[in-house]
Image (cartoon, rainbow, N blue to C red):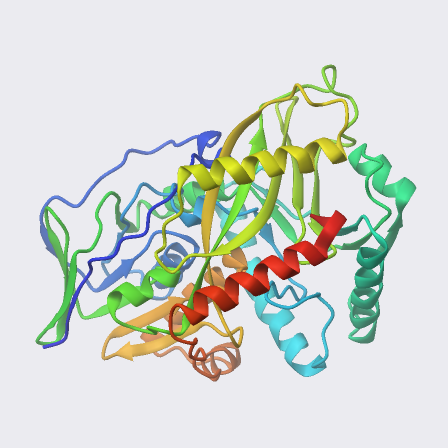
Length: 446
């Protein structure tokens, strides 16, 4: 009998502004008894809920159960920057430009498959424009190096025939209201989401087809005969097939140990303001990625005439899956300075929320995917693009588990296994040193 005792549950630090400003319209229900199902999905984020939707479409008569350790959108799914990106975006490299054209085109096709899936979710469940906005995104440059990185990226996009538009300093100022940026590179295929609203909207839409139990962490997962049994504090679920959509937490279930990097990134969101209070922030909505991957991501969102700005900076490697409130507060102070440099004169606008969010990366930029034991499937390790890569992994895991053949699944599953990391503390020292060097090199882009 295969048996996994789950001792290591990740924790979240700080209140995510996305979750705090999101509206929930359905009740929370924890698992309170023992049940059987055709399918069990562990994890109610992008991967888990996408797998649940895919199964509900292909197996509408089957009983599908989702277990999540927290309340939906309070974990990593509600703590990202809200970019669904189609074009190449590798956080572990020093820039976004690409060398392997064939692999890049395959990745873009996969990313767009996931975005199309999410667009269907938005249409079917009537998600608002504030929740799902196909606006595109801009890679913003604030230095000579950033302008050079953007130019390299432009050339690589041009080489593979991808649509893009170069923005000058005046156009960047008109959009953002800030004199900070020297130029930008716009690509139209990205979608901006309010991640907490998207997750809750998807869950709300699935409620009539899928049983979702929150505040129900799995404490033990064991193989009993032809089924798996997941035990929680107050109940259990038995099902012949299980999909794990738990990102880096997959290691707590006994798989991919020593192969995944647990990276935390940090964000702050301002309090709400009107254009009458602060007119110097440009148009109602915009979304900036840094020209250097280790720089600052900045978004402006507007709803009902009130705006907020979100700043995301800094990365740390934390294999314990825990970060302190002190660290979040320290990085929030850095983000305050980053914000003030971009928007001088807005010093009295408070940062209302600051938080940390977990990412999972592999050394060779591949997912932790596949049937890891009989009837047990992994849809994990999103490599820093959780909104898109986790959506795709959830879709592909559902297809793999049901035996649905497709060229997309063939490409997705035929990837190498995540490469092994050096032993600790060598990994901790090496990875954090590389991160810090890259952050310092980002300079004014941060």
